[in-house]
Amino acid sequence: MSFSTQPSVADTAHEEPWYKRRTIWRDVPMSQWRDWHWQMRNRITTAEQLARVIPMTPRQQRTIERALDRFRFAVPPYYASLIDPDDPECPIRLQAIPGEGELSVGTFDIEDPLNEDGDSVAPGMSHRYPDRVLWVIMHECAMLCRHCTRKRKVGDRPDAISEDRLDAGIAYLRSNPEVRDVLLSGGDPFLLSDDRLEHVLQRVRNEAPSVEIVRFGTRIPVTMPQRVTPALVEMLRRYHPIFVNTHFNVPKEFTPESEAALRLMADAGIPLGNQSVLLRGVNDCWALMRKLMHKLTANRVRPYYIYQCDLAEGLEHFRTTISKGIEIMEHLRGHISGLAVPTFVVDAPGGGGKIPVHPNYIVSQHENKTVLRNFEGRIVAYEEPKQYVGMCNEGHPCSFCREILRSGEESVGVAGLFDDDPENIALVPVGVDEADDAIENESADRSSA
Image (tube, rainbow, N blue to C red; front, top):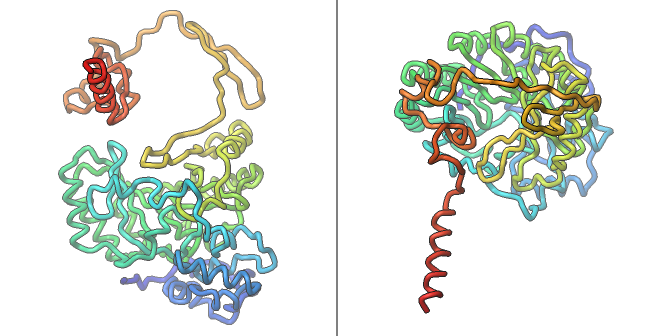
């Protein structure tokens, strides 16, 4: 793995933070603390090292050692310094340190809950949605989050994307021009060196002309903001449009260092989004979530998603009910700025994709009227127009529709049912026709007998 040698954004941060002063790293010079290479080299990876940072009972230490037989463990000094050593339920601790819950595999736990391997079209690349792909280009993270849906893979070798794997991914993008959006993920893609990351971006921009936007999925601004250097950000801005989605789960993760990293990217014109995961005992509280949304928008980060925790192995102790997520959304919509309201989604098991889930605001409908309720519970009637003819109707598509028709693109899923095609009036699950034929054949055999 190669690393950048540029100075960190935290070089411009404030004096030594209080959370560092209370740790075993209090005597580490700030020049080292602010160096992300030092942070990576000094990650905590064993129960023995962790015992020097926070008090642990012998049972807790044994639990961590047992958990390490199944999943890897790594925490940078920066993120470890945010743990309250006197609070066993500290939300930073719960996200960073293995617990007994990881030793159990739930009845419905799935090794690959999102079927990313099943949707694979090239090494590390999954194509589930029509116009975008997910491309895992790094298998290492600064911190190995205990709630990660890719725990089975993170930390695997090789760490970074090889030239052969890069060639295969580029070849897929060139042969599938419908892909206009590439999400670079991991592990954490920001752990690539600046040069290697730029090489990936250059090849995407130069060799896959259909790709309009590149997104990064990273938790670096949260777990090791020292990596967000002026050199990294200056390189990224040369390849706009670039988007960055990060992963703050609790307000406590906002520090002068994390805020400096966000500020550097926002000032470079990089739109920032956030994807939180709803976690039992960590952030399953509407008041906490409201505060988190306020902190995000104050730092120019658009709340994008709140994820229902996936059905990955060893995560059942983190999962909440979906109804808890809906309750939280009731306390956000209408109570805070619409800009600060994320979408609550369930990433459907088996590769079904992200399904938005929200409170039901439609009370009733009939031909000319829709009855709605607002966040206060006020019920109102919206009168539908008596005669409505849209700009796109049967036999008279608009110019945008005609462009789609000329391209040969077909509507996928439920959207296809709105096409004016009498042959397309139902969605039939894959395999149902075959099953129906088998039943009919069996019935015919019985009748002839």
